[in-house]
Image (cartoon, rainbow, N blue to C red):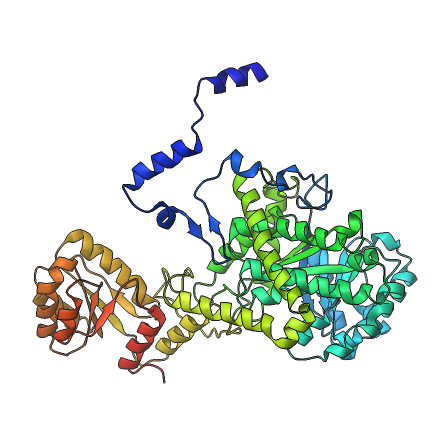
Length: 602
């Protein structure tokens, strides 16, 4: 076999990197390689259009092995199995138990109960867990942070009563007071001391039941970039390591009781790399405290983000969450929660929850993502991304440490300010169509109505476009935009397509056309169709003739818009033409202005 391979490859000359670059330069015909083909990510590093073996030979990550320090290739050696987790609001213990038993028969093997603080009691837990075998199914809980100690003791008493093998009880209790501090809902000085006994005594003998959590998914749902979430998650976890080990708790015990609840964005390959980089960096951090081997493993529960979800064309959310789920699965996480596609505008129903479960089951039962450990290993691209993300996240981690640690940083507000700035930047990029939201600011379905949907999360990237469109729906009449296509066939079609996409994002009805022999014919047809906006679509060279003639003939009877930014734009403006739409305008602000002119909204 080796001789056959050697003979086969011996017939081909292997091109060098320089030869590839020379070929690319020829194909670019003088265009700038750096500007055309090098992707400068929002996370702060450049991604090349291709990578070769020589690029990764200098990296350490390809030499790692699955299940071994620094765990970049995952915590497991034999397979890639993860828990399929579903969240349950346990306001009523009996109803929550009924739902849990039902979904356990439909593919779920990890339950997460949100327990109201006033319901925390032994009787409540008995009802909630009735018929659920906690030594077979992963069980997770969250409640008021001040009730966490009490709930931890109640759970252990229940496990003892049932006689469970302590090593087979897998799960967690979500204790993350730093999240409360970050949101201004807790005093920092009351954070740690009352909870040390949970680690050192109550849960000490349950090696696979975790208590200290880092909820960095909340940062991603507020707009954080991948490296920001990871960098702050590391600093967040390190703060707990510092605080708890300083109380005399062994670092191995602290680390083994920690879980990271991280988000998943739509950036497919970078998310795979993020989870690999996360394990790599966390293992290095924990090692510095003197912990060894399995204590350095990072336990990650990953949740698909709500930040990029939309209320219009909502089933596109399924595409987003599916690729996100794939990223987490291939990235080797401990468990995954898929956010139902309708979560942005209503409490998920049975149908959307079923689809969310099946999205993971599809990856396991049909795609067999659970059988191969770290399938991304060896990919030049993913190995490079892993290293680049690790480097950028580490810079953020060191910056936080220079500020005195995560607690000091969130008390000073620097973390919150950084995430808020990114969120604002991303909303601006979305308004300028430099960050696309499929079905919202790109390729919207302008025939769709909201049907009573109302956004539940105003920080989502699509929220401002959705608010604009909801205002349009409330208008007495749906605005009509008419494409006056004339002149050069290629240019008029391209600009009509762009303008249709641009204006439909506000919920306008758009009428496209094949072309008119004269501007007068086009204007007459537009008025006959009841157009509120006439958009002239032609070539830059022809606008000097067509645009003034159309504007004069229209004579103010409705809005007039030029599609493009022609060289004669200043001359057209001098003749009274005010409105131009093209790739460089702020789409959101332009549509708001149009709505104002059309007397839509406030």
